[in-house]
Image 1: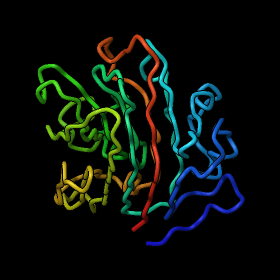
Image 2: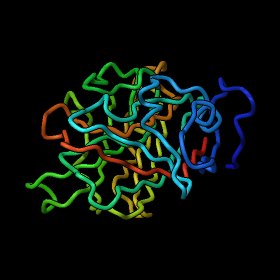
Image 3: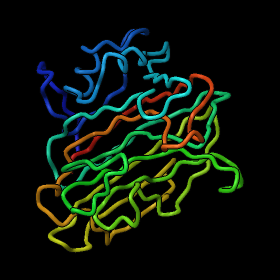
Image 4: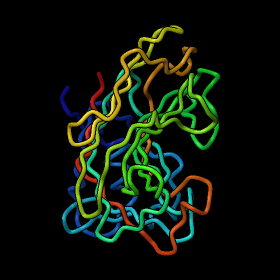
Amino acid sequence: MGIMGLGASAQAQIGDKGVYFNHNAGTYWNSLANRDFGKLSGYSSAERGRLSITGGKQLKCRMLKNKVFDGGLGAQAPLQRSKEYTLEFMVKFPKGFDWRAGGKLWGLGGGKVYTGGRRASAGDGWSFRVMWHRWNSVNGGKPYLDPYVYYKDQPGTYGHGFNKRYTIRDNTWYRVWLRAKMNTGSSHNGVIHMKVNNKTVLQNNSFRWVTQNSGREVDALILNAFRGGGSNAYKSSRDGEILFDNIRLDKR
């Protein structure tokens, strides 16, 4: 698929799109966000104040100390509806990053876009994001990226990680690639696929996202950069930053 621009309208929805943050260093003004992603929802003035463009033309998201959920970025951009999308982005945790227990990164969603402990068992919506985690008792205490998915058959109240992990470290760029293809009816014939640096972390070609037509499309780009989890284990005593670059959306 090729890349097409958003045009002049801030209301435009993204289909195929590349976003490379080729803006002057400094404040990531609302006009720039609209140019890059269309009209964002759930995007407050406080969140805008935590975003900036670096001299290297990356998007820098600041996360506030002692905050979860509301201390970083938690927005969505509308997508042109399709049964299948891929999302690719680069992410970097700067040197000395305080991992704590973890937090949310970017992803895709559809229908009611279930998140935040709203279980998707009604079958009318879903979300597929990436998390970073670090637990002393898991993965040898090393930080990792893992899938975080709300879907019809999820086993618990919160998003499912499928016990899949990709070990990471600070001061390193990682290329994350997600693919979501919707299932038909109540069948297990959808696709979920996640890769990091071209290595498959999760792939299931017999996946059931939804059972209702109202959620059977990819229609949201989820822009998340915040700590959480709901316990104090996710909080940091100092502000943190995450860098993003080279966003690519392909509508199939």
